[in-house]
Image 1 (cartoon, one colour):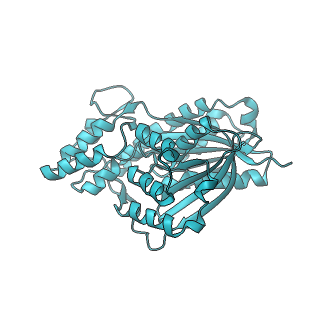
Image 2 (tube, rainbow, N blue to C red; image 1 turned 30 degrees about the horizontal axis):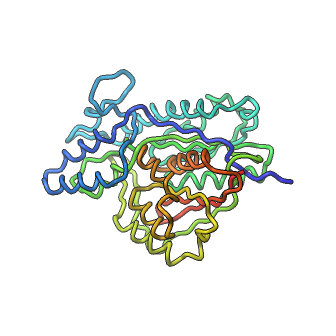
Image 3 (cartoon, rainbow, N blue to C red; image 1 turned 90 degrees about the horizontal axis):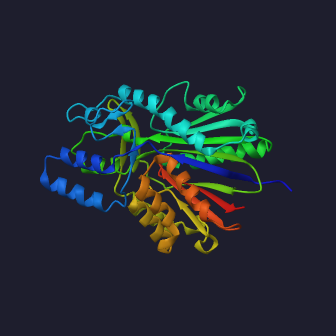
Length: 354
């Protein structure tokens, strides 16, 4: 009997500094209008986020090999894109190596890896993180590499989709999937409350997963992409002169809730799903999914837990949710993963626990 493609292990890591409160204070201090500042603080308190991590040292202390938050994001002098990319090139490999060490691959598992897939939308350099992984794990120089870039929060599911295709075509080979984002590097100076509230969703993190034909782990069943018509302007992500510019419309939860209800036939019946791994793009996104599917509050507890402890780490976040969910799941349970991003598109994956 052919073994299914399965995620057999997931490791995760974050940078060392919890910067959520410091960045909230910094952002609030930029507002000239007291009413806007008060509204910003109220909305932040309702965000469902208490911790986010970064390599930026938000205390302003001069610590070796760290970034000084006060110096990096000084009012009237926010860094240009090239400087931010320099930070990414310095710290992304560090976070990746730490995550790979936590994956604790055996020699046999390392030898089986024939393809490395990287998803990221917050930094670019070459040779990139795929080469970092190959060198750190001492993989074969014939290891193939693919980078899934600039797709945003749903990129991990696209990476899993590609890994599934590869394993199905080469059942003896394993795939190493890396999802790494340093979102905090793209903090923008602005008086636009919507922009600053969008930024304060995001934190930094990395996930590394081993995917292969196996009789244990999280088995991948199928994928489906569903794009909401005429929604292209709701999520926009561009490279600007002062970092990457993210625009998130406040209409996203409303449109998402409406779509889930009106297009119910395109999704599994909730009675068929035991485990929900929904990308926690924000508290309002999770509320929209819960309302759209009419789910019990406990069904999205893993997603809300990850949001609370790490914020939205773009493509890495869904893997944090899957890791937490898999640790408490039982053999035979069926699950459904969803990630949302530009389009607006919902990338989905059906799975079951082996």
